[in-house]
Image 1 (cartoon, rainbow, N blue to C red):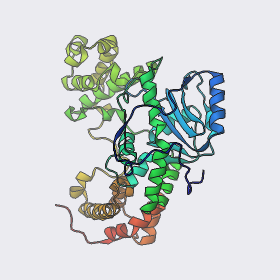
Image 2 (cartoon, rainbow, N blue to C red):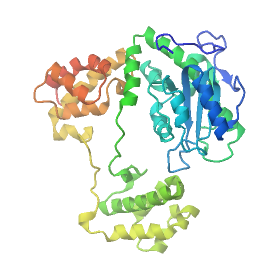
Image 3 (cartoon, one colour):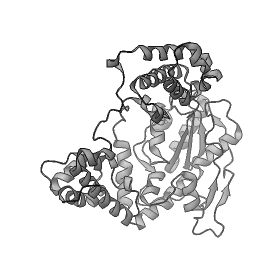
Amino acid sequence: MSSADPQPSTPAMPSAADDPIANLPLLELRDGLSEVVDSDPALEDTVEAFRSGSGPVAVDAERASGYRYSHRAYLVQLRREGSGSALVDPIPFGDLSALGDAIVDTEWIIHAANQDLACLAEVGMVPRKVFDTELAGRLLGYPKVGLASLVSEVLGYRMRKEHSAADWSSRPLPAPWLVYAALDVEMLIELRNAIEQELRREGKWEWAEQEFTSILDAPPREPKPDPWRRTSGMHRVRNRRSLAVVRALWEARDQIAESADISPGRILPDAAIVEAASAMPVDRDTLQRLTAFKGRGAHRHMRTWWEAVDHARRLPESQLPKQGPRYDGPPPARAWADRDPDAAARLSAARAAVAEIAEAHRLPTENLLAPDTIRRLAWSPPEEVNLEVITAFLRDHHARPWQIGLTAEVLTAAMTSEAAPLD
């Protein structure tokens, strides 16, 4: 399909603007619920069906977040004109590269592509071209960009979302869950076509194309340092010895969770880790009397938890974690006014200028330019500041051409202006 000439699906669904009855419930599949593809013959038929279809392919994946440690796909949903819909169980196969290869040369429509691309790649499905309906919704300034919200706002249909937090690793999958999953791709083609028309009307189509390309070109995400510091409730942990307890318990829990492929929070809740760090128990009996350790999951691994706490209690001072997290880049902006008033002034001027442009174009500020890029520029601007240098800086930090075109001049001014320091 040519991106400039999208082919509408049949039958065409009315848009919210055209339909006199807005928010009609989307409860049934137009082609009925198909059997789950979980055998080699069924997969071969599905591959051929999608190879011979036309136009873009709507793709979605269901994971078991909150239930499993891994982020693997437990169900892959697809829909294409001339192919119908398919629900593919990747577990019996492990590899779906034959299916991925059958549609690799067409556009994949994915809502929130960054959430699904990794688990799709894990089963051998890697697109060469994507259309991200969530990202497109952001570019158009929709206040809510969840799939259900966009389908309601753009097409006028109310989607079911009651199974969004289901355990998709369970088998067999109940029929109501499968209907819910199939509905997630039921409207994606229509939504994509309507959104493209809107992007073109607003002069944002080239922006969207650059954004979609950047999704596929983005380098793999580097693991964040000290992931244990993201434990919920960390603000209650006041000293380095207690931080060591958090770290030890988090790492012990993570090893168990990875080995069993169970979500860490189901083995030991964050609240238990923080309670132990705050109480600093002196022995195993004291630890297991803590309120958050009375659950069955906590008791099952009580020996491991006490060994972790005891290890942290005995660490020498030199091996205790630092009070604050490590930063790869500028310090938190709240500290700038005291540490470097000039940098704080540059940041204030840059943020205000970018926010003004974003508002003028009905964009979220973070989609106009990554906040981290603005902070890095304001904290350590180039020695020579001019439009060419700032443009090169933005390009080196993965800003797209449309973003650079809108922001480079005002950021150059912000880096050279005599803005008043923050109070």
